[in-house]
Image (tube, rainbow over all chains, first blue to last red; front, top):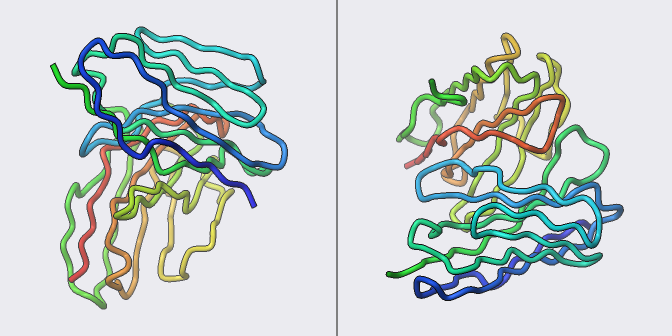
Length: 111
Length: 112
């Protein structure tokens, strides 16, 4: 059975304190791994797509990497506006656009 | 210029009632989705439509029935609401079933 596990569940950081979030997955044939950001009371917002081990993507203070078993979302020198829940998802099966999401990591960045 | 909109944003109703949630996207996408996010924050796909054709139909009670009048709209009708249906329901859209999905603001459904 396909599984996506994110850790930690919650992370509290001081502004400027870099850290990493983990997303481990077990899927039969990875077709893509995706990171989304969700702010309280809003829908998820797409961040990155990773397709193959060794691939990296960057956006501002965020950098996503992928290995054969897990992905990391590195947050470098975070700011309070980076506070959000970060969701990892994998594309499963052959179904059109079918994503399986992890439970997310809630990040709080304090000034 | 909202990309994906949902109405209503909040819905409070009693058990046994029937309710609908509407979704519209103005991105020109051809694929739309319904997701359910429960109290533990897990986001699970329920349905997807591509050009008005049902593509994904997860293990969801028959009380849930999606309808897509055109590719810009996807509505969700729920019959005989139960307490366990309480959740936030998100609509999303993408092009060609792509995984860069754009989500609406969500509809918080509370069944009492």
